[in-house]
Image 1 (tube, one colour):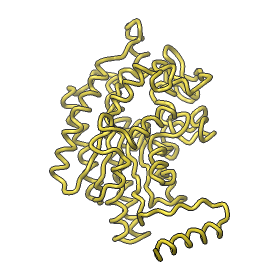
Image 2: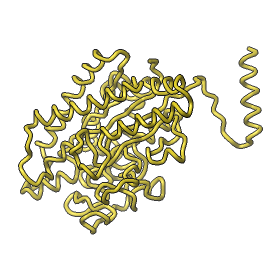
Image 3: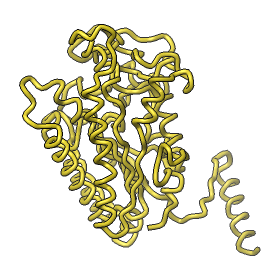
Image 4: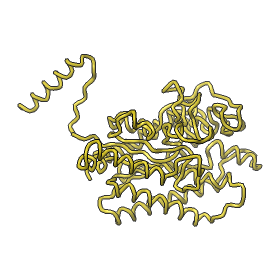
Amino acid sequence: MALISSLFHLCIFVLVAHFATRIVCHERPHQAALFVFGDSIFDPGNNNYINTTASFQANYLPYGESFFKYPTGRTSNGRLIPDFIAEYANLPLIPPYFQIGKKHFDHGVNFASAGSGCLVETARGFVIDLQTQLKYFQNVAQLLKKKVGKTETKQILSSAVYIFSTGSNEVFAPLSANSTFPYSDTEYLQMIMGNLTTVLKGVYKEGGRKFVMLNLGPLGCVPSVRTLNLQKGVRNGSCMEEVTNIAKMFNSALPKMLKHLEKQLPGFKYTIFNTFKVLAESIDNPTKFGFKISETACCGTGPFRGIFSCGGKRQVKEYELCKNVKDYLFFDSVHPTELAYQQFAELLWNGTPAVVAPHNLKSFFDLST
């Protein structure tokens, strides 16, 4: 009772000292950090800081207008999945890697880069590939050791959650290949999984133990690919099944690879979010999820607003912007709206095994290592 009373008076003292400042007393001494890797689904603005083109950036309006009221570099009208997960986990907004000089980074860092993939060759020279993201993470691990010491760093890195969204741009790459694509689907998938395995092992070597993977959505059904299908002569602009099939191959290989690592690496734990199921259901039955329009983007031009021109800074300058973004599943021709991301994040956080397994993130953050 004496200890409880002391804690109570300590909180009251701090509250009085800071007047209106909201005080949260955590039971645990260490809130698990969040480290983020991947592509435009997760990029909070890292591509703002690299030598690239507007095709790989979103640092101009109307991106960001619904929440931040200015463009942050996120390819949506507002927040992304990691922003919501950080909120649910009582963490501050996780900073982009290139802002860690200005901000605290012991709660985690976001390394994601729009347009990137598992392979170095994917958009080479314009993005931060996954191997380079790993190098940046290794750099952060060293900075942490200097800041808080080896023991504290080990604690932070082992209890942290590492979340990945990658592979989509490898699926899209053959669509933009100027010549015949040089690999069979099986060879290509082996390359992708090999590189992803190397990166996961690299994070593990630094102390990472808890890995969250998003599988790939039905990529043949995003507005940009529907438009491409229409240009190829498919009259109704339906989904491009050959693209979705490659995503399905990736999704089939992912759990096998993770189970292998679980057997190979002591303490390695993982969970998979079924992006495919959630996004497919949202596209097929938008009203169930509060949307009115799931085939056409809010921002872009052409059929389905599927030409990637949102903001007018890329190759095509013309674009249209919808009146009510909350009606739409997709913000631009590839990326979902903030509302869609919020729904995905909620399912990731406390969803059932039908959508996130073997752990949802609420239990995964608390899981001891």
